[in-house]
Length: 343
Ligand code: GAL
Ligand code: CA
Image 1: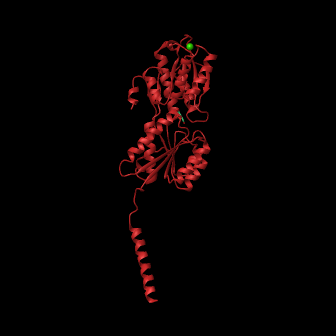
Image 2: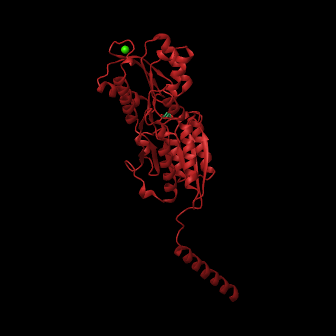
Image 3: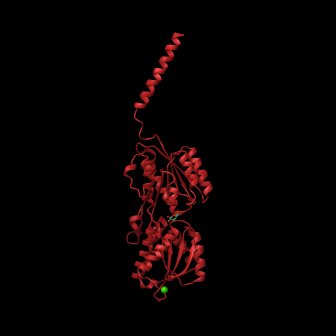
């Protein structure tokens, strides 16, 4: 009996000792592993596809030292329900940080609840949630770019081109007949890009006459379709195409080719993004200019922030706007500097 008592007392002492030893030990600063889940609204979107490629590269680079990083990518293929399920799945698979490109930027509540319940920080990117949603939890961040700036730059590039080349005003009526090809309705980059591009042209005293607008949801094939319709309404009358992104500008060019317009009968086309195909088109002169949407810089910021959000490492070096936003600047791309953007 006595022996049992001594044994029990001894065990309690050992446990207390172990407990103290545990408390005294410094917590490891880096968790063993970073498991990043990346979910994209639609991977057939050209810019997003290229951004994800950059993001994989950035994680690979950061993971080559002491950190072990694994990355899992999911494509929501345009469905918010699918995306919500993918968030659940990735959290179940022990992802400890999520990079989310929302399908519906007005509907992130379910994702935010899931992340908060499991204490998994989220970096939203490219499709910006509204400010109230971003306030729901302190571990929500956003990485993107300022839509107004891209529109302004597109407007400036167009104004420069029009001032430099009087032949752009083909019918010599002193006005530029133009069409706009717009991205998804409700996207922060669609309406704002259009408005600020047109306002910038007007502020440069360029007289404009709008022939029409087509919504083509960032997509090349849809833009070709819309442009063919516009051309059947305004054959040979359009002098400039302002597209909210490169894919749609290239779709508009496809429409002219499909309808057998000769090179000399083409209007000037302006895009935004500087995708690989967009940059190629600037090099060979099919696009007059584009605006670089800094996918490399955005990917770098997302990857760094993901590591910081999990480990705390490097968080104090990150410069935020309003504590949780990072906006990378756009840059103008013309045939003069386009080669700087190729890599
Ligand atoms: C924009 C980009 C578009 C499209 C869209 C998707 O920033 O310019 O090409 O990718 O994001 O959300
Ligand atoms: Ca004209």
